[in-house]
Length: 107
Length: 122
Image 1 (cartoon, each protein chain N blue to C red):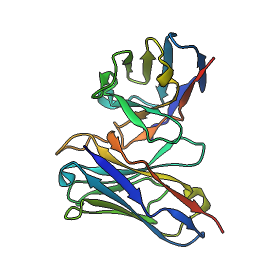
Image 2: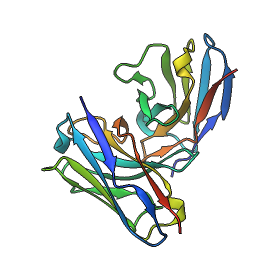
Image 3: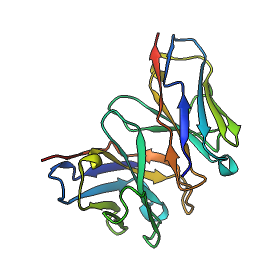
Image 4: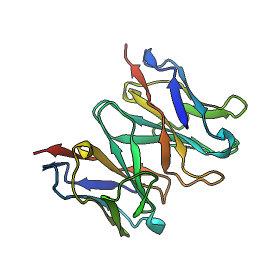
């Protein structure tokens, strides 16, 4: 099983800041098969990024993904108030597993 | 628009059974792989099970293998999760989720239901 480790656990930032979230895999992920989701309290997750760097339909371009092999990053270029949430990475190269999440909170 | 709506959650004693349903609308249900994903209170996401378009292939997480059964009825646009021998650690919100592409299985999810809470407690 591929274990995903997200860091940091919590990111304290202000609107307008840049957010950089990390996702590290215990072994190489095939074909850039990494997705990122956003989850707000009481809501289902929402797909943001797939294939490590492709934005899902309707996702603003302030969200971007990058990385390969075992290291992947989600970047939010300028935080909007609605971006404060928990973010999960997922690998789907070998069955599928999720990271434990990074909470982006107001500083 | 696409809607997934889960039902069937509730409080159940350890060792008992429960069946969850997920009603789909606004999509060609029979063309999509479907999954169950769960989230224990205050915890992260855990993939549980998936079924191919026609139910011919199914996969399970090790944590539920032999206890849970995923199935689907394409004539009713409905996905099911039969949960037997429930344990306290199965307590979670259960989401049904759609695999992203018609006719392919990619194992990431572009549509989710709002979830249904299952509490296993005596």
